[in-house]
Structures are given as C-alpha cells and as structure tokens.
Length: 322
Length: 289
Ligand SMILES: Cc1ncc(C[n+]2csc(CCOP(=O)(O)OP(=O)(O)O)c2C)c(N)n1
Ligand SMILES: [Mg+2]
Image 1: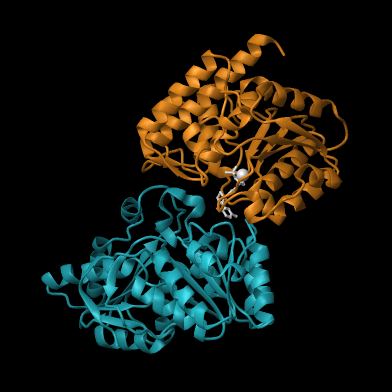
Image 2 (image 1 turned 30 degrees about the vertical axis):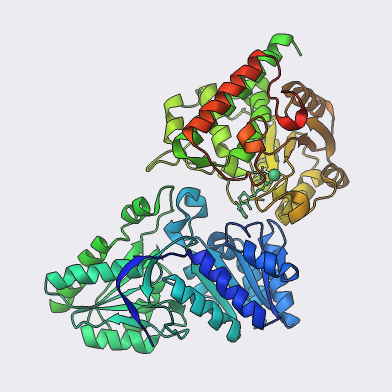
C-alpha cells in the first residue's frame, strides 16, 4: 500500500545511506549478493557494506568496463552482483559491456548509477548523466528505475535482489525530500498515483516528482486539477497507467532530470502516438550538455522546476481544449 | 640548470599552489590532493619547457598537454592564468554558475586547455592521437600527458601505451603522478599497480623516475627524454598526495577535501615561508620543512 507524507519534507537519511542499509540487510540473508566498486566505494556510500562483508565487497579500482563484464561473469556463476559507480560511467563508459556481458546473455546483473542528472552538481558537465536512461532504454532485456526517496530506494533494492534480470537504478547520492511513509510497498513496472486529478497528468521520476507535486498545488489554485504519477520504472513502461492517465485527463506532462529525448518523455510519446494520440509536453533537458553548479541553480538552468511544469501543464491543457 | 631558473620555477610552482588554494578556500572544497602533487611538473612545463603562446593558444606549432587526470584542472587553470592565457580574475569563478572554469579540464571554454578530460583513462589516448596527427602533418611539437596513478586501473591507458610504442611516438612524453593514493584509499588498498615504471618499460617506453617535487630533477628528466630517440617516453613522478600543503598531506583520505578560507590562507603563508627559507615545497614526507 502507498502511504504518502502530508508534505514532502527533507529526509534524515541520504539516498546512498538508504541504498547501503538495504544492501546490507539483503546480503545478510542472501550469501550470493556481492558489490563491485570502481574506486567510488566511499562516494557511493558503501563503506559500511565493505566493512561488514569484506569478501563480498570487491573494489576493482577505476576500471568500469572490467567491473561490468566481471559482474556478468559472477552472475553466470550464480552470484547476484551489484555493479556500482557514477551514472555516467555505468552507462556511457560501459555500454557494450552492459550489452555483451549482461543483457544479451540474459544474466542477473544489478547496476547502480549514482549522481543522476543535475545531482552531480559541482562535478560538472563531464559527470552529468542526462543520457543514461535513453541509452539503456533501447537495449532489450533491461529494467530502468530511479527512486524518488529513501523509502522507495530501500524497497527497490530489496526488489532487485528478489527479481532476476539486468536492472539499472540511477539515483542522487545525497538527501532528497521524503515523499513516502516508511513501509510503502512498490512493484517494479507499476507507476504510483500520488494524486488524482481530471485535467492533466504530471508524470515524473526521481527529483522531479517533488516538483510535480508542487506544480499540482499551484495548478489547483488556478482551477486545474492534476493527476500526479511517480513513474519510477521508466522501462518496462507501465502502459496501462499511461493509457488510463491519457483517457482520464486527456493531457500529459512528463518531467525528468534527463534529456527529453530517449527518456520518459520519449517513452510516453511513443506509446500514445501509436495508441491514443494525446497532447504531451515534455519537461527535461533540451539537447544540451550539463554544467557545474548547485542542484538548485541547475534545476533553474535546465528548466526542471515546478514553475516549468506548471507552464507546460497549462500549455497541454490549452492544446487539449483547442 | 642555472640557480635563478630553479628559483623562478619554484616561484611558479608556489604560485600555482597559492592560486588553487585561493579557489578552494573560496568554494570551501576541492580536489586538493591531486592538484598539489602536479604543481611542480606544471611549473616546469609552463615555466618555459613548453612552446606555447598565450596570445595564440591554438598555434599549429605549439606543444600540447593533455591533463588526463582531469579532476586536477584547478592546478592547470592556475598555471595557464599565471602564464597569461586568460585574466587571473577568472580563477575566482571556479565552479560558479556560468563559469568558464568548471571542475574538470574544459577545452571548450578555457584558452590553453588542449583537450576535455574528466572521465579517467581517455586523455592518454587523445594525446597519442594528437601526437600521431602532428607526425602526419609534419609538426615536430612535443605532446605531454599527465596520468594519475589510480587512473592506471583503466585498461584504456595501456591500449594507448601499445599504440604509442608501436608507432614509435618519440615526441610523446607521458607523466604518471605516482602520489600513492587514489579515491577510496592508497593504491595498495584499492588496486596495487606493483611496478609502474616496469609496465611502461615492458610496453617499450623510455622510462625514468623523477623526484616529482623537485623542479630541477623534473626539468632534467624531460631534457633527457627529449634526447632519447625512437620511443615514447614515460616519466614517473615520485610525489605525495597533498604535497606541500600540510592540512592536505596530513589527512588519510585527501582526494576531495572540505577546506576553509582560513585553512587555505594559513597554507599559503607556510608556502611563502618555505620559499623564503629555501625549503620549498617541503612537506612532511620529504623531511624538507
Ligand atoms: C572513468 C572514471 N571513473 C571514475 C572517476 C571518479 N574519480 C575521479 S578522480 C578518482 C581517483 C583518481 O585517482 P588518481 O588517478 O590516482 O588521481 P590523483 O591521486 O592524482 O588525484 C576517481 C575514481 C572518474 N573521474 N572517471
Ligand atoms: Mg593518485
């Protein structure tokens, strides 16, 4: 059951802390779980895991291609490997390794990419993953997710250890606003309806979920009732939820901390244009590289804020009514 | 080397350390460890060894440098500003909204940066490509590259070594900043490279060890490399992560440090003192303080 916080408040735990906690809990129950680090064990928050499971925490150094194919090998030999690095390296740097050593052979590799999109902040454009979802989404045999808070993070890590397949989870490393109450359950591949509304649907994942909720509040004051969906699984897309949203509200805004090309916006547009043409507005990065700055600055810079969602929602509603 | 040349190069390396300390002090954090360990080699390169023209940074006949360990860009930005490639005032904008100077070396926005880096392991391949292109164009420029020692974990580094040796790129001089640490800990804790010089030798490089904190020794090694024919060159710089900056050297995990403006100001004062007293860059490990 989904239990929501009344108002999203700053969380007490970092996303990486939640990730480590869940991994340790599961690793305590399942001897097959191993973590493969690439000299980012500390930044990815997995030092405690390393301490508790020293033989099952492997650090190959700055060698992502090696780590990714090794994960494939470990999976072939029956383990449940988590290959962990920054999102840019987990996608761009190892694309063929994900393909050849993980997805194509149908193995059971879990990939965690830290610093999704603008959350890489001061590491700047070279480290800003705006393409990872798009790149990986066109690969068969892969699941792509981004949790929106620590409650969901822990639940998804648990789900990943219990389901078979190549799964990519991108995430901020630090604190995010809490959206869910402790104990909420999530099903991979099923969107979470956070709020009902009849005029437009706002679909988001990761840090834009909170922005979508804020946008819905603003829209409500202006008499526009927005349905809000946390589409934390980008692939496989929850088609039933997208179609239902389109039927109920007749207009959709997607919002993502990623290029509009290739991500959720693309996925939703692909589905609806073939089955149920619906006005869609896509909030996200518009074919640009990232740059350095704080998350707040970058969200403004790339128009990922509640204000942009509000603006685009009004456009979508106007298009529906014209 | 003339006495006053040593003095000039030490002044330059001190100024590099001082400038990135100012940048980090203002921001409150930065890659202090890996910037500190390349200040001396950068001083030798930009203090006269490299043929560069700040007024014409893209000159065809210039020497090139690819900072493969791109996270140490602030040290290189400092060297370039000191050399006059862009106004010193730019340095204070490091990592600020809309800056031309982002945390990782950016050739798109910074005059004098020869290649974009930040994803480790790729810069050396780019440097090899530049060197091959120069040969095809009939240019006899020198191409320099600075690798991190942790960066040697990346297999691509050794793919590039193979190519450089196969084509006998004798105008390629590759430094390894052997500062003994990477991000999660020491090399020995994370991935022990065992014998760095031996690896480059095995690939066919003309290989030397230099005291990476001693501008005179670095200078001499480069001249020796330039005289050795027929093979690409590797100079392993024996350094220490955080070199010459006590608060950085003292910390076990000193890859990325939080640092206050006061801490940086104190470190700058200490640099000036060592310079004056002839024990620069000092540092605990080298017993020079
Ligand atoms: C491909 C890639 N993987 C991971 C990182 C993250 N990272 C940045 S610096 C660093 C450690 C580098 O160690 P080393 O090469 O020894 O550099 P230095 O000690 O000179 O700072 C890591 C893992 C990166 N920039 N690129
Ligand atoms: Mg190092």
